[in-house]
Structure formats: structure tokens, C-alpha cells
Image 1 (cartoon, rainbow, N blue to C red):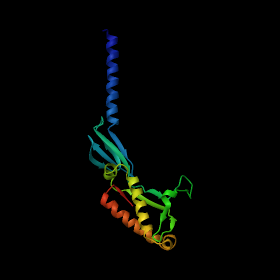
Image 2: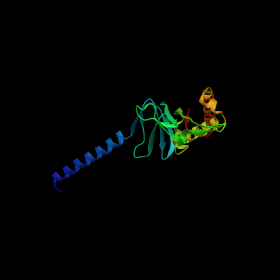
Image 3: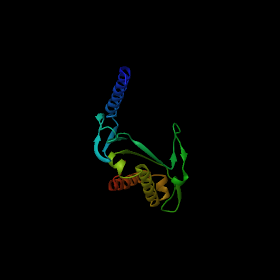
Image 4: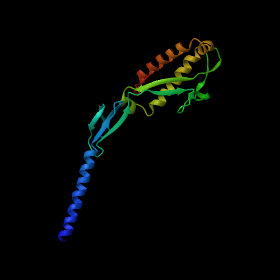
Length: 182
């Protein structure tokens, strides 16, 4: 090998080593926003929950970071869906039609706000916590409406129904701990 070839190979080796080092260094830091928390797993086992700021992680896939919006209220709509600026939304008959305790059929629209209270439980306790919450809310709304009269559902009993549903859902969420709170 002549001197020029050795110099070129040495230069390529230095550039490759620099790229590897830079990749390892820049791939070892992550940033968490104010409304987020990060669940850090090391070799598949949860090891830390990180708050906002810049943090270090072990490179090469040894540690993985999953970011979760914890300080953001999200919503579930039952009986209707809204998109963008659509204030009234589209009715979902299969979700909104319910039978009252006096055997009348009513359409009930419901709106619930929730947030993630435990990022570890949210990520690892169930496969789809939002779907579980939606089904739980729908079940409890049907339970309460089914034991109410049509007059109370349509007039002065709405607030009482909301309070009963919230109490029932909160109790069940505490029992199953899927990482969500109303």
C-alpha cells in the first residue's frame, strides 16, 4: 500500500469514528416538554419517570423513552362527534339511544374530560386505556339513565345524572388503575 492510500483509509476511519461518536452523543439526550412526562425503560423494565427538561439516556436501545402528555385535558364524546370548528357535531345513534327506567327511549349526549394521572399505568396496565374509559363511561351513563325517569333525564335531573356517573366512573377507575382520571 502506498502512502496516499494509507492516508485516505486513515481519513475515512477518522470520519466514520466521528460519525459514530456524534450519533451516540446526540442520541443519548432527550427533551421533555412542560406538559409531558417520560417513562424510561431499561432493557424492557420501567426504571424512571422523567419530568420536564433535558435528560440522558443510555444509547443503542438499552434505554427507551416514551413521552406522555400528563398535564393536558383530553375529551371523550359519547353520542356525537365533533371535528374542527363543527360546534354541533354528528350524532351517533348507537351510542346516544338509551332506555329510561320508565321504558322510554331518549338520546343522551355526553362529554367527559380526563387526563393521564399515572404514565406508567397508562402505558403498561392496559392495551387501550381511552377505549376502556369510553366503554366504562358509556356503561355507567346507561346504568344511571336506565334507573331514571324520562322527565328527570330531559329536565331537572341532568346534573344529578352527571354527578352519579362521575362518582361511579371515578370509583371504578380507582379500582382498576389504568392511569386516567376524570
